[in-house]
Image 1 (tube, one colour):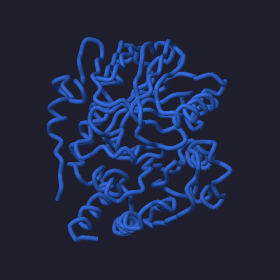
Image 2 (spheres, rainbow, N blue to C red):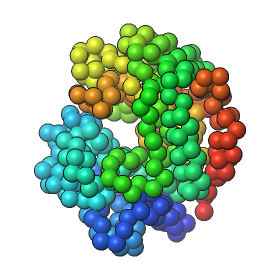
Image 3 (tube, rainbow, N blue to C red):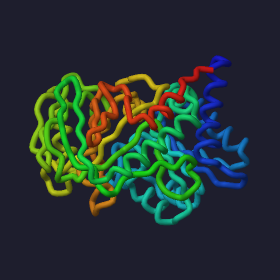
Image 4 (cartoon, helix red, strand yellow):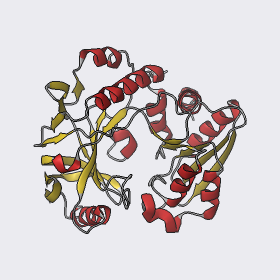
Length: 347
């Protein structure tokens, strides 16, 4: 590995371990990976944990075929026991363990700080945690989450150049972003912010250009999804995409129909690039919107391998305020000051 890349990777690892998860001396840190995860990435993160005084355990297993509860038959008792006994669980597996029995046990144990990282590539990890002023990005992400939470009950709309045009009401329950992941619970990679709709209020057409159902890929042909409360149907896509998407929607709904839209997002990470292969990075590209379908994870049966589509270059409104225009953040003014303080760093 070139020396400069090695330095960037170590800087990214320290941003995750020290700045984001505040690993303390003596803490037990589980680093889960699958056989696709690059060894250099695991070595950098494990070394950072050691420098912080933590006790790392790197667990590598075959790639699981599904996320959520559908992965349970493929997850070992050994990993489940380690997760429950860990202070921090850095999960690089993709599909990831969030929503699985092992993840549920760790969350119920009340000890573990779980990171849904789902990254196999050292380069992608460098971009997400190293190619940005991490503190400035967290300042904006926290403020953006608080702003959305303060607007519960307001109407929202987003469009895209390929024909997306959908409206909905922002739900009362909205996800927050912790600047430092120092409390037990589930945490995600910063650089995007989720927001939840009143699911029965979603109406219009959503055109996705990438899809994570049974695997993640850029779509050969976009898929247009029609929604009026529930998802009514979809069209487009390649012949190879339609059967797996149909299966995933019906499986995730819990009732055999197509279910609901359960979350939307707004990506804004200045250090990312579009890959068409890396779901976690692609949904953080500025202007991207990760569209979750099925049931919410907090409802019975929710989170069972729910599919996600991606809309790119979105224009987004909250009430009468335009937040983004074809992917570029434009408001409100108090957030733009924090947004513009984020810088892409390559050193």
